[in-house]
Length: 252
Image 1 (cartoon, rainbow, N blue to C red):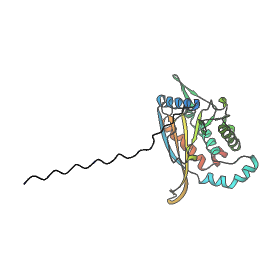
Image 2: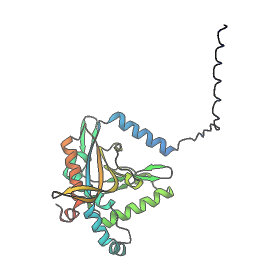
Image 3: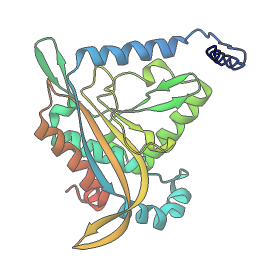
Image 4: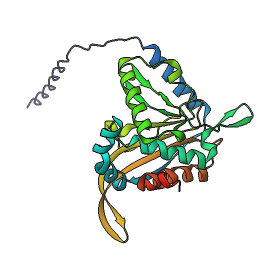
């Protein structure tokens, strides 16, 4: 008997229908080009290392809740968390001078002034206005300056001299919901503090598990200049000051 005919191969399935593959090409703004060049330069030049810690925000949040209305009435600006972090940074910069220093050729330049750059998201990109002599500023002075710079950043009216000359930078990714991150140093500075979102989570206090509002913080530093011990001491100083703001008032 003749052999049965071979089964016909299955017909190929039709290719899926794809939508139109559109692209939009937009020229980078001068600001974004400049920022990208500086950040890439930092990656290529610095020996960047990041150390982490966590801060119990209970004390600062309680202080803010208790005095925010009186603060606004007295000073005309809202009491936020940034003023405490800025003042804590000033204290830490004095405690660990290497973080406030820069490398210039084969020399280390120790700056004896404390100008903190605050990273602000603007419509055209990231800008970093500078708060001058933060060690001499009050909490209200810091909050007022940050509010003014924030408004200028949105309007695009920040002057060049308002964004140059900082010795240290604070970046708050927490306002966008960031839980953790490793910020990139703002050249020619030697370190940057990264703040993150506040999250309720269990921690052990005096042998008991309690729920506390916790914030992760990160310090990226130039390891060519700042040793690990100094970086950890710096971040611990900020942690202690923020967890108990009375330390700032008593200069402890």
